[in-house]
Every structure is written in C-alpha cells, then in structure tokens.
Image (cartoon, rainbow, N blue to C red; front, side):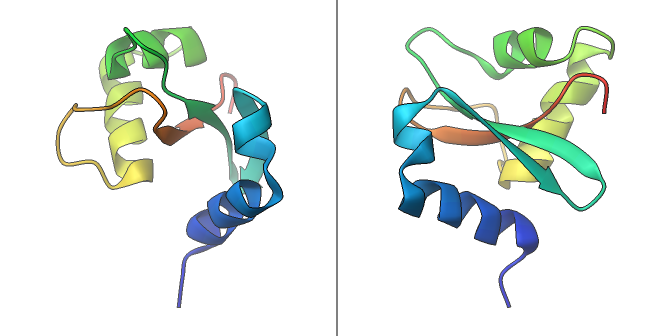
Length: 88
C-alpha cells in the first residue's frame, strides 16, 4: 500500500500542480511539507537553508533525504522533492 506521502506527491503530479508551480503545499501526517522542483545550481544544502532558517541545515538535509528516499545528496534539475516547511 503506498504511503500518504507518495499518494500526495502522485496527485500533485497528476493534477499538474508541480509542473505549474515551483512550490506546492501539502499536509502529510503531522509534518507540514511542500514540494520543490530542483533548479540548475541547487544543492540539498541550499534547498535546506532556504526552506528552514530555524533548524540546523544538516538536520534539514537529512530530513529531505528521508522524505524522498535519497541515499546520497545527488539531485538533478527538474527533480521534484518533498521538503519540510519552516516552522513545522
């Protein structure tokens, strides 16, 4: 059975929300997240520091990796990532 996170992301893609906007907001479980489309020059570190200014970027990078099933920090332009929202 797919997770609520996977279903939410799939719905956004099916509805075209991700393709039309850089950010799309979702409420998954108790954590607030948003999706972000990776741009040229982005890194997980730059995304983490922009997404959450109140937490240690190392922790936010680890959370992004966990939310997206990433085993390393490799990301590609056009890739859609689920990221935690600041103030969650």
